[in-house]
Image (cartoon, rainbow, N blue to C red; front, top):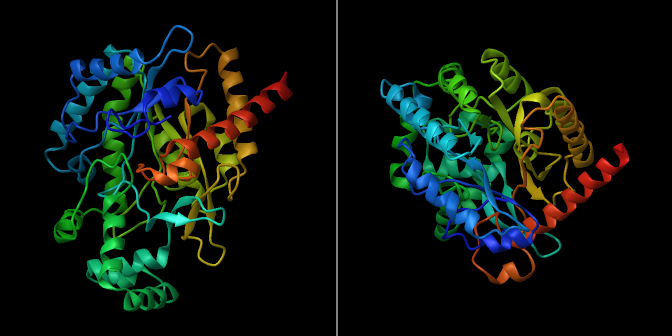
Length: 395
């Protein structure tokens, strides 16, 4: 399960009690682009392991994430320095025995939602992305130049209606939600400086961003291979362009192109069913089967898309929504067995239940949106049940 460090309301003993032995974490206190020292890595690793015991050990199994500096994404002359720092961080992680590293290549905003407390019919709270609300923020709150041209007429009309109905506090709430991102986002912005940040990408289109991604992976993946580290790129979330910014890891073809261009086993994917699943043209079971050998990390969650506006979605319970979770997990069970038979050292693919509804006692607590304990515990229990049933069926 993901853990955001000592300040996380969910404590390491809670993760143990949930039945997870692997901890997914990162050194969020270190500014983007700086080297993670071996001492800092060792300190976090030892802290995690100190909560385990001989019967139930805990380990730092996945880094999520070592952030990629914006200068690398923009392809600036300073990118070389930050790539060198990234390589040193990988060497330090490998020296401490950590072999799975997740990252993403989304410009500016790592994650975007419009409501972090969307009430579900059962009374729990979920994360929600309402495309017209996002458009209303873009056009009427941020007031990005020519923003309305990026949306179709129906969405613009709905955005206009929403914006005209908002009181001042509602505008501020939407702006805060969009700019805040989710836990784990390494950058936080204010409305006052956000346009300047976007302007830094004015000369970066999808072609240039993809070239910068390939340059980065082409430099770090061979090193990761020698170090025994699996690199796992997280797909775009949501998986389509926002705020005039390009996104290049949203579809099956995006993933195939990256893996084929830098054909190094260490160059792999974080298969996030929620992110890829927010696009109706992504066939998740097919993707899981086709890409299986290069999937190094798995995020399992489900989204329910709006049938009339497919770019609008709510994060559903893990076994609900539009994802065929049984078929997806079946592909990973088959792949793990294939890896065992070929003696691959990474035959166990790390998986975490991604996000979860705020529910039960957690409704009375301050929690990280999407990362309360009980909602993820429910998801983990359901997902492990499917996995066990599939494994027994295969015997």
